[in-house]
Length: 265
Image 1 (cartoon, one colour):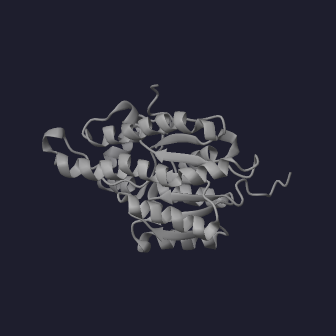
Image 2 (cartoon, rainbow, N blue to C red; image 1 turned 135 degrees about the horizontal axis):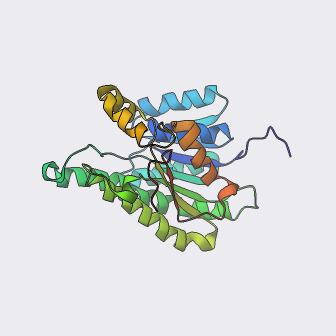
C-alpha cells in the first residue's frame, strides 16, 4: 500500500454552506484526502476564496452558488457536479440559517421557524433526494472505489435541547430523524446516512466569544477536554471518517463532537 496515497482519491463531494465555519472545515479536510470538493455556497464571494485556498494547498475544488432552501437550486448544483466530474459520492448538508438566541415568548415564530426549517429539515430532504441516484451508483462501484454517503450537520442541541433556542433545537432534531429514516430506506443500496453534532470554533462562535468572554469560559469549563473543536482538524476529521470506507458499517447515527460537554445518550 502506498502510504502517501490520499485515502479518498477520485471521489467527489458536495458540501453545502462551505463558504465558512464548519462547512469550510469539512471541505478542507476532505480535499486533503483527495476528494474533489464542490463548495456549495449562497454567494460566490464567500465560496470562491475557500476554493482558491483548497487549490493552493494542492486540492481540487469548485464553487457552485446554491440556495439550499430552494429545491431547484439544489437539483442544479447536483446536476452541475455530475456533469463536471461524472459522479457524486458524498453529500454533506451543513448550510443553515437561524439559531439566534431568544426565549420563546420573544421569538418571531413564523419568520424564524420558516428560515430554520427551510435550511434545515427541508434542505436535508432536498439534498438527499437530488443526490440519491448518484449515491446509489457510487455504492455500486467496487470496494475501495466508491460508497454513497449522506452526512447531515446537526447539533448537540438537537439531542439534549437547549434553553433560549426553542426553535433551533427541534429544527436540528428533525435532521436526526431524517438520517435514521433514510438509513433504513437506503441500507439496501449500501448508502450510509449519519449526522455530526459539532461544537466548533466557527466565525459566529468566535465572534460571540469576543463579545462575551464569559461565554467562552463557561463552555470550556463544562467541556472535559477544555476547549471548542477545530473546524478542520476535529470536525472535518469526523466527516472524513463518515465519508470513508472505515465507516461502511455505521449508519443512522449521530456523532456528537463537542469535547465531551454532552455525555447523554
